[in-house]
Length: 272
Image (cartoon, rainbow, N blue to C red; front, top):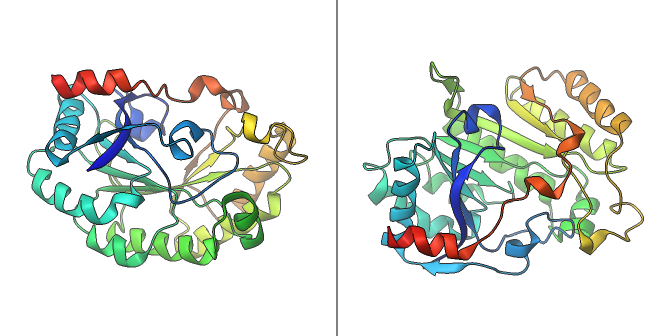
């Protein structure tokens, strides 16, 4: 069984994924990180979701395809990696749009190798180069080494970034990095490591951090980024030798962009 919390078109991914019709997102409940600042805490920490079997999960993918989704976007799927191999092998002939693996980056190369040929676009986070910060904020051991190895494997599987005539990514890797308050050296280490893997890699430099209630009183995480911090992160991007990427307006740092996890909508889709 899978536990999912949302099935729907999402218009706030990177432009080459959302396009005009939206990315077809399926949000899994749970996460293999325990980020104290998580903006989707309702499902990652709270476990909100409903259980579906393999056929129902496939139905959700085909529903999104029929709705015009540019791709099928599997959000935080790592906990189900082994199970998804079988499901995707069975569904691949029916799903005609790219399949996106949208993960924390904190996953094993062994599991990723099993997905080879089943995933068209990898969309991992690369949150930390500072392992002490990774433990303090996400209870993740050796995050930098594990995520770095995972992204190298993703790039091996998808060595070229391929776009259609419509500008949509058909195959490739986009690495996301969320810039955190007072953590520019962490950002520097992440961007340098991405450049070591492949300077042509697309990087989404995210400025959408905002403090959730869980960290509202934290002395560091209890504030939004400043414009100066985000501009400094952009300078680090170019200093690292990177050239392909996406940026955000700091106005995106708001709860307005957090998806609505309405389980009744999921139930309705399953009945269609």
